[in-house]
Length: 366
Image (tube, rainbow, N blue to C red; front, side, top):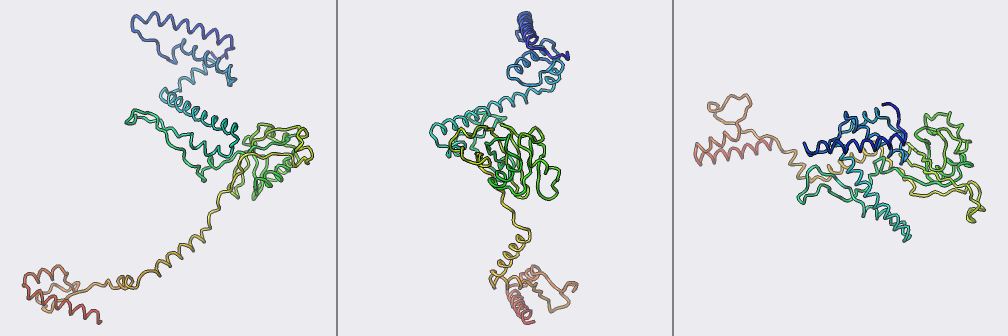
């Protein structure tokens, strides 16, 4: 069960499983009328899946080829609902890829390469796979593509094609001419296949300096060859770029490059990265905020300022000590005064109003 089947073994097993499944279906059709379902514990079903999957891997050169035991473990971890959703989403991605290829072909035929980016946004869509259908019965909801987020690492990352001779160019030339000279990096960090081969800046390791005189194809981590993608980062500028290298050996065949020096024989393609905007210092933001608050305070009307300062409480005290409540707080609420005025009639109310006016004047005088 742990042996990996060859192409011949997979073909034999596949044909045998098909014949066995047909016989099983014929024998159970009269009883239930339902074809047998897949079960990872069914030996015939697992042999069929393993043989078919391995043949597909052989055709498309997908590694590693799985044994029957390994395939059973993989099949046991597959959730049908998730697998179905993944298949739908993968199909939608392929359909969007067709749109991108169509735009590239049209741009190549018409020579309108500068219009590609706008065409991508107009022809591609973000497709949402809905759990419940819409009012029209649709389970797929398309929407326009959103603009790239400048703060997103993926959206902001750029890929630049770089054509040169990796057998003659050194790491020092790559940094000086292309990375710093053309792309504008200040303190670059170079990674090949995720492995660090060079870095600059505070705390940088000096051990990587020995890679500067080496040719690009002789660098560690497999070196740089045609098809290699190298990550270049600069934390001081919050800048990242992927360099996709294209190998070119014979530059003398083209008259335009024949008379140029070796350091001039390179081609940079694609959009160059743009450094993220540097945020303003915290002290500057605080100063701006204080200035705005001060400006708002100065712009307040004088009447509003006077109104804010004149919100003192007015206390009305009764002259008759027998009818007055205990002078714990020395005041009677306006509500109680109004009730007494209503009980005493209009004349009393007028007197209270008059006394209230007099008290207000007195408080103002004090």
